[in-house]
Length: 343
Image (cartoon, rainbow, N blue to C red; front, top):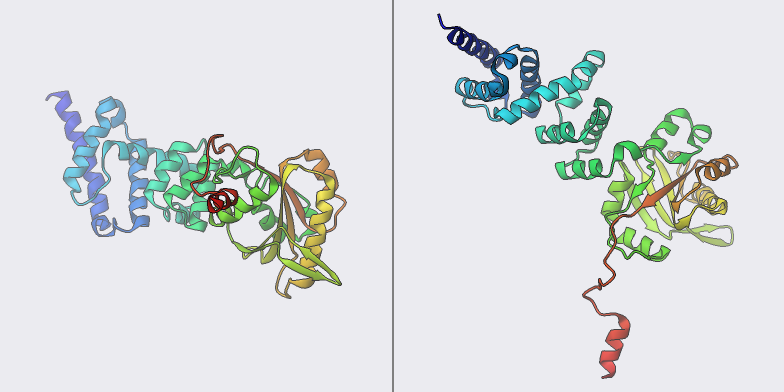
C-alpha cells in the first residue's frame, strides 16, 4: 500500500480522535463560553505541540489540520491555520507555569482570546505575559487598553517608584502601595506644547482626568485639585488629592515640572500629615504622598526619603509627543476677542 496514503489515513484518524474528544465533552454547546473555548484552544494547542505530524507535513500541516477540523467540527469557529498556530504558542507559553501553579488556569481562561493573541505577539517571556493576564483579569481591560499599557511598557514601570513604604507601612499595605506606583509615569495622552510650564501640565492632567486615572492605576478616585485643608489658623491647598479604594487611603500627588529637590518632600509631607489629621477616617489607612517630577537623582531621592517617618514616594514622568510649533487652538484668545470688539 502507498506509504503516503497510510500517512494520510493515520493523520485523519488522529484528527477524528481529537474531534470526537471535544464532541463528547459537548464542546459544540459550550464553545460560546469564553473559558470553555480557551480550554479547548489550550488542549488543541497541546495536541499540536506534541504531535509528530508537523514533521511529516511540514508547512502544510496547519492547512491540512484546519481543513480536517472544520470538516469534523463545522459549528466551531476559530480553526484557521493562523489561529491553530496561536493555540500551539498559547500552550507552549503557559504549560510549565500551570504545572507549578494550577490556579493560574482560572485567570488564563477568563480573558478574551483576542487579548491572548496580542499578549503572545508582544510579550518577551511568560512572566511579562502573566503580568498582563493578571492586569486584564483584575481591571477588566478592553483590548485597546491592554495594547495601550503594553505599548507604554507598564510591566517595567509598575512598582518602580522610590519609596519608604517598606519602613513606614505594615507589609501588606506596603506591598499594595508599591503596586500603585510607577516610574516613569507616561503622560503621552496629553496634548501639550514642548515648553509647557507647571500650571499648564496640571491643567492638562485635570482636563484628561479619566486617562490620568487609568495611568495612575487600579482603584484611584479623584477627590480634587487644590483641596482646602484648614490646619489651625492656616489654610493649605493640596496639589492633587485622590483616594485609592484598594489600599483604603488618601493619596496626595504633587507634580513638578523640574528636577527633584529635597525640599519638595517637606512640602508634600506637610500635606500628607494635614490630610491624616483633617480628612482621614477611622477606617482609612495612613495617607500616602507621591511626588512626580520631570527628573530625579535616585540617590538623593532615596536618602531624602529616609529622613521622613510618613509614607512618601518619588517618581518621574515622561512625555514624548508634543504639539507642533505652529499648532494653535481653533478658539480665539481673550486678547483677540477684545481686539475684535474694539473694532
